[in-house]
Image (tube, rainbow, N blue to C red; front, side, top):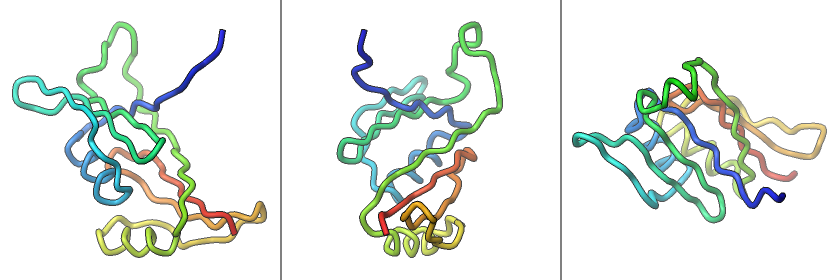
Length: 124
């Protein structure tokens, strides 16, 4: 058996706000979406080879995925940390200062609208 790929699925309280965050700040592109009763309930996003899925929280199957308030951290390697840090401030997404780590990465972190921690890093 081989795992061929993996895609994080983020369960969103406000899928519209979370979608806007990933599109406007991290420049993800909407590849596919599903709507129910005129509301967005699922979205497939890509930026280069990086893929995410967003799922409206109330669309989870309660019997197979019990409700938990768990947030995750996503780590993205980027090529211009100063540009993204400036953009995050301009778009009013508060984040940490850029710090240089002892493992030769420059990083900062911020949260998406659902409280998932986003850490971005650039090789020093």
